[in-house]
Image 1 (cartoon, rainbow, N blue to C red):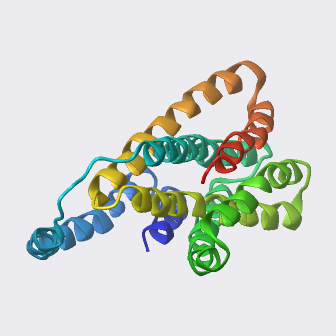
Image 2: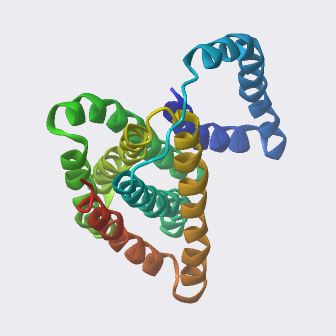
Amino acid sequence: GGNIGYGLGPLAVAFCLTMFGQQGLLLLWGPGLLVGALFLWSLPWLSRHNAITATQQTSLPVAASSALAVVLGIVTLGACVHAGMVTYVPLYFSARGEDAIIVGSLLSLFLISGAVGTLIAGPVSDRIGHKKFLTFSMGILCPLILAFLRSSGPTSIVILAVIGACLAPMFSLSLVIAQTLMKGRLGATAGLMTGLGIGAGGIGVTALGKVADVWGVETTMDVISFLPLLPWALVLLLP
């Protein structure tokens, strides 16, 4: 659900801007206020649930700590790739002369494909193993992004959707692996993965911005195409 909403965001923004101008962005307050109201309504239930499921924490073994560091590295580097795609794919298509609606639609396609890929990744990875699934999905990203950059028309759109479906499951599967390693620390694990890991990955976009300023968007996309090799190499180190 969250991934689908995240995916529809660019399309909603493009529609509001195109139809109503900057004032149209005020319409996006509606979903935000609705989510806030739902959170307030669910707080009493969440408090009772946390009190019931609280468990005594124990220290992590050294092997688990090392594996957790690897998982955190995978999330950080993978987040850099994902944030780079979200940031520079719109600029890449804009440089080709596409209008705002088309650019927003393509970005939404990338993100919604990630939501679909995450749904598929759950049962498939349970069957074949999380490490095997990540090894495959992260391993094919480099050739997929290179193929996307060297294609056009419907072919490039299809490849972009496949990239989103292969990249997004990395977050949920890494979180599952980390929670397995940190038994009884579900909140701390989620904070590490989504806060530190994804937040630190966003810093990589700043470095990519320097590349774009000096060599342009196309060169930046070429750099992004090789970045998945880094988290893929870390996946091979997982136990």
